[in-house]
Length: 214
Image (cartoon, rainbow, N blue to C red; front, side):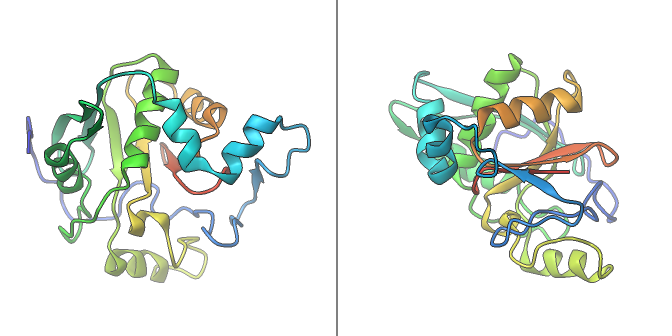
């Protein structure tokens, strides 16, 4: 794993993890959301993306021969730059490094990150026209951590089957871009779910169906 630096943070609540996340089955958030399918003026291509986000993500990143990401963990201080796609295929060593990097920082549990989530981030950085690192608040979330976060209060809003537990969701920000711009770029891509948490300082993106909430 190509870790450039590491400084473990103290155990404690992650920024924004008390916030609600749209339930992956019902699509309902505590303070409401706007779904892509709810907009009657969508074109056929956009509707296709909502029905098949995996295919839409694949199409969005089909051009470049190499796909690389730079990440910084706000909890551990670790940094990683990985080329996860080259020579026409995903690179297993890089995927393993990314799985380790995006582990549950509380428990140390490592999950399998959906490669399409990496492609979503790659498409997002292209949309943002930035090579700056994504700052990661939360990647993979273990069942134990998810249960703990749900148990903090009856209004925690954490989904019982959070897409974080499947390695299909990530909470991010970027030092070189305003949070509102990251949200705008993610929603314009229409490649999955986008949650906006300005008070907590991050945007949630996932490879579930197209939907938006805040």
